[in-house]
Image 1 (cartoon, helix red, strand yellow):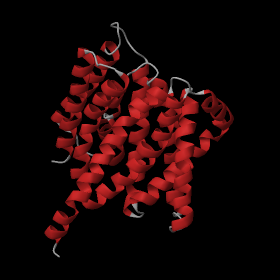
Image 2 (cartoon, one colour):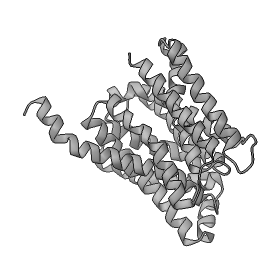
Image 3 (cartoon, helix red, strand yellow):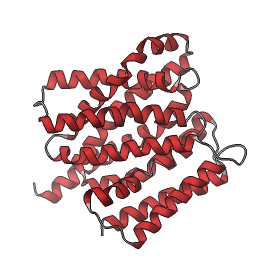
Image 4 (cartoon, one colour):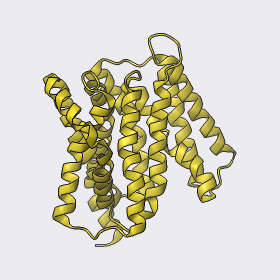
Length: 295
């Protein structure tokens, strides 16, 4: 079977994996909003990622992949707490006031932030249109910050979600060299396991809060721990095996619109016109920046 035949044979599996990834990752923003009805941002982060760390740890224990080299262990020690603990607490705190749809558009700013960080660190060129795309994205975030609430005014939760996106961006840059030396699924398992450790002190309060929470909240948190966190990352690893990373990443632009639809259906959160305009600008700027980086 030649390369083209293998690509066509794997396409249905790849597209199915991408679809699952998009839906599960998009639904996380609404599930977080449900969880925050009865848990604090830290308790919700602990409930989500400590539960997800269990299958990640079992995978590492059963599959026994080679231990990471010291340089990769150092990277994991930075990425784990940054990408899991810090990211989740910042995102959860921001979503206390920012709806699921607008929050997803802000998180989608990650490629723009990665590009900005890569300028001094990796010496990448940006160009005029790269800067134009960056400006469009940040103006879009400003629209969300000032116009996504019931009344026109600045929502500081937007800055916290932007900080969460920054955590993801820094982690992406630190993680990138490891993916050439280790399988993506192994890297993800280590990140989930190590990243959940800083949340251990919150376990007693989290268990108590879960005991008081109604059934719909507990179900949402279980869903959050299993589907967006474990299954979503697993299907994304499958997608990256079936398609080139650049092509697979293009589908991730669908996460924010999907999260908005899920927020409307699940939570009844209808975005304001300003939030929709801001979201469209944020994604449009990301598309432009990515297009300029790939030229």
